[in-house]
Image 1 (cartoon, one colour):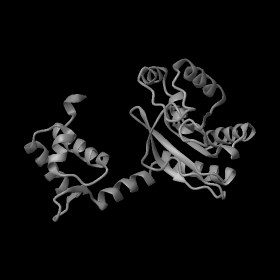
Image 2 (image 1 turned 90 degrees about the vertical axis):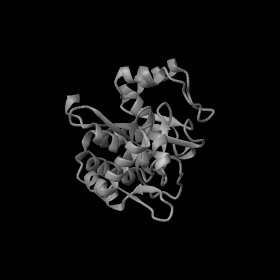
Image 3 (image 1 turned 180 degrees about the vertical axis):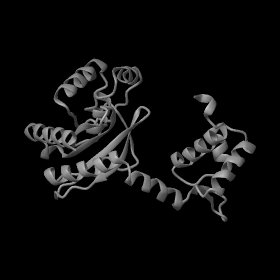
Image 4 (image 1 turned 120 degrees about the vertical axis):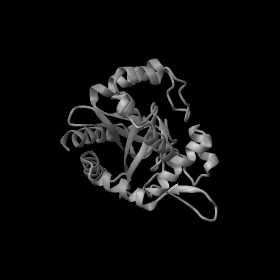
Length: 246
């Protein structure tokens, strides 16, 4: 119930998230601008976060940043998360069977956030998506899988927004995208062919919870020459096998 929510705790969490999203140390004035609270309120919340060692202030610059302790605490929580444990097993198996780099992404609003990357062992590697990147959902292997296997209402909302043209191969035609989504749901995986990064092909598949809820998507890929149609289909089946088995 909303009556059980602490508004002060909520404001502190918003400030903590704002510092994380800012991507670099920020001043109190930066935080006031980012969260929109008065300076006095923001200052109290910042002081609380500093007291509990979630953030720290550099004495020379006066800027605030996330503490190592906070990062370590979050990492411990992730390591104990059963879904993250499953994903780690999946990514290791994917790299072992394909020799190509594998990724895990989650939905972050209307974007796909890269949270994990396991490097492949093949001599041919691409940089492409890196941990921390936020990518559009209508192109690429894992992002398209996140879109395709989302509830219909979320698909409709996303396709009603302006769609970014990442490369010449990016599809922004909503009718075609709906056809791709229907196809991907039938076969269990998505394919991005030079539509997110030029010369790169990626195959993605959804990761579901034990209750059948979408929690993220995995993908694997490499340069277009390494991924002809036959290999795309083979890797797609590998992903379906792994995501349903783990």
